[in-house]
Image (cartoon, rainbow, N blue to C red; front, top):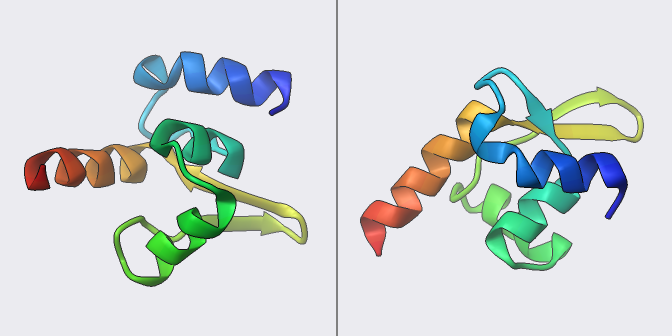
Length: 75
């Protein structure tokens, strides 16, 4: 995980709803492998990320918070 991803993970609760985070942050928050994150996107448990460029895909923090709240309700 890159330093900026680590910082985003640590500060996730303080990030604005409009911020974007990379896949390693999502993986670390959920404690799952990258492939599992993409399976969760495919089956609708996680929101689809936004593609900014060829190799730049990010999740919107506000969308992730909604998904995490739904996980908490289901548990």
